[in-house]
Image 1 (cartoon, rainbow, N blue to C red):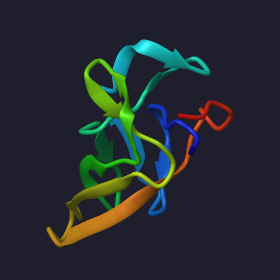
Image 2 (cartoon, one colour):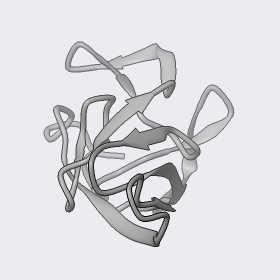
Image 3 (cartoon, rainbow, N blue to C red):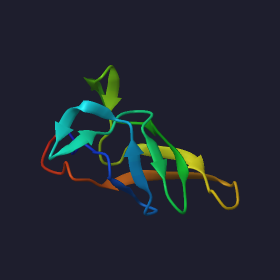
Length: 95
């Protein structure tokens, strides 16, 4: 079990999970991030593409956890980037 990721969670490259997530499922005051939640920042603009919590669903999508993979592109160069979620407000909620 890994801690649940929320909107405003950070990736290893410093990018932010911006949503939409599961807006009706709140964890420590923030919506829970799910598979396909958007990530945006200076290094990567993309989506959460893989999570370990496949059996924990919110709004019909698997919950994103710490170490969930993010795939996207660098906004300046267009080079593909892959990173992981490493920081979240839901650190004490396990899924």
